[in-house]
Image 1 (cartoon, helix red, strand yellow):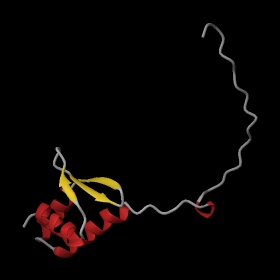
Image 2 (cartoon, one colour):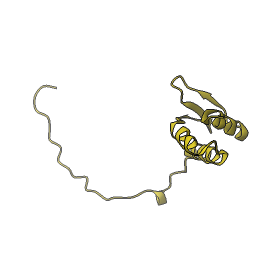
Image 3 (cartoon, rainbow, N blue to C red):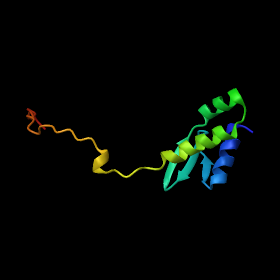
Image 4 (tube, rainbow, N blue to C red):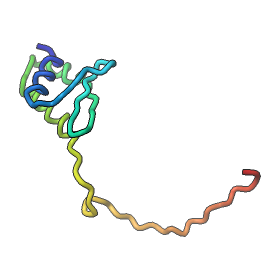
Length: 95
């Protein structure tokens, strides 16, 4: 089996809907998000060491994790105080 078949089987095992986009990438629907996934790197990895189901499972896990957005809190923001008294030059001439 090639990377596409293995990826499709892994998505099906996890119950994740997917389709093939017009450009050959996979469109994966996760939690209301649609991700376009290229399997080129996975193809290269599998070509070097055979069809390794663990690699495909790990790759699929990374794809699904990318759709899990963490909530933004003030603890996760970086604050940089800056002055707000910048001079704004007025534009001369017709508007």
